[in-house]
Each structure stands twice: as C-alpha cells, then as structure tokens.
Length: 111
Length: 208
Image (cartoon, rainbow over all chains, first blue to last red; front, side, top):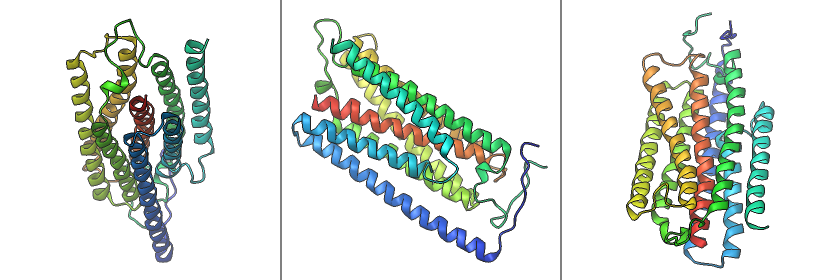
C-alpha cells in the first residue's frame, strides 16, 4: 500500500505550462552553475596571485559558503516548498559541525 | 497497486519522488542522513585543522610544499561539472524522458571516475614522496578527511551504476523515481563537501 498514488492526467495546457516552467528552471540551474564556476575561478586566482593571507582566507571561505548555499538551495532543490524539515536536519548538522570545529581549534592550540 | 505501473509524460506527477508514502519517507530519511554526514565531515575537518602541519619533530612535509594547485583545480572542475550533469538527469526524470536521464547519469559516472582516478594518482604521488598515512599526525588527518570524501565518491558511483543497470529495462515507475532522486542528492552532497575541501585543505594550505 505504501506505493499507492492517484493518477492525474494533465490537460494539454497544463502539460505545456509545466514543461515551459521546467525549461525555465533548468536555465536558472545553468546560471547557478556559471556563478559557481566563476567563484571557483576567483578563489584559485586569488591564491595563485599571492595576496596577503589575511585577505585571501576570509574571501575564499566566504566564496565557499556562498557556493555551498547555491548548491543546497538550487541543485538540491532546498529553495522549493516542502523542504522545511530537510532544512532543519541540515542546519542542525551544520550547527553542531561548526561547534565541533570551533572547539577543536580553540581547545588544542589557543590555550 | 502495481509498482511497475507505466506512466506517460501527461500522467507522470510533477514530483514523482514524493508521491508515494515510500518516496516521502526516503526523501525525509535521506535528508536526516545528510545532516548526520555534515557532522561526520565537520569532525574530520576539525581534526585536520587542529593537526595541520603538526606532527613529530623533524617534519619534512607541509601544506605549502605538498599541494599542487593545477591538479586540484582540474579535480574541482570535474566534480562541479558532474554536479550539473546530475541536475540534467533529474530534469529529464521530471520530464519523463528515461533515456535522457540514463545518458546524463552515465556522463556523471564518467566524470566521477575521472575525479577518482586523479585522486588515486594524487595519493599515490604523496605516498611515493614518503608522505604516507602513518607518517605524522598531519598526514593521518589529511588522508582520513580527503580519503573519506573519496570513499563517498566510490559509494556514489557504485550506487548510480547499479541504478542505471538495474532499471535499464524497467523504465520509470513511482518505485524507482525516489531511488534516482536520493542518489542525485547524495552526489550533490559529495560536491558540497568537496567545495570545503578544496577551499580549506588545498587553497588555505597553499596560502599557509
């Protein structure tokens, strides 16, 4: 019974509309990909250009965070509705991950 | 109801991965698993950051002398592109184009294999230099973090290949749509982890 589903036949108009919408969404995905590639290029160029490490480190970390947010919200569809619980799971995981990293960095070498 | 009931593009649901109770459970359960994976990788990152460039006295290796950016750059581009190809696969799944989806997943697998080959080459190169798993605290932390990611790539590849082969003659059903969807989520997550690895391990390692 767990695989039951109602069958709904789309009308021609509905079908064409959803097809158009998907094509538009896919164009958005390609834009997201272009931005991600661009950020990666900036990060690698900044390191290769040998700027001060106090400038580079925060910039490339920020680029990484933005890139991951794009990946999660667009490639993994977290921006679509019906994703509240997945967001909760992932952000709780990220929160505990952040605490772990903070602890290891401070407890071991700052004391 | 028959699990292998055939659909047409007109009857195929908008979100085939979440129509059945089974699909909904897979979707939620898989995101919970990804939350757990986040904690796993965070603890490995924490260990690596704490032990980076540290070890017994007389250490001849450091992140600055070891890492080579061109190789990491190529690996990054390959994995990022494979993430886009699996988005294409899911696009075709929503459009009920089975051949298109199988083809794009096949491309994803090829890119994943290329990434894996480069990673094996890289590890092999380090071991030849004398930077092996038990060389220092730094080397253990490095290989554990990057190697765990590599194992995830292997698991993802095996998973996707099995899906492609097992369902080749079946076509779409509401039974296998959630399976494809979770596999693609897993593949994206592998890329999410890699974004932090190339930034925190390689780029910040080269910067010092």
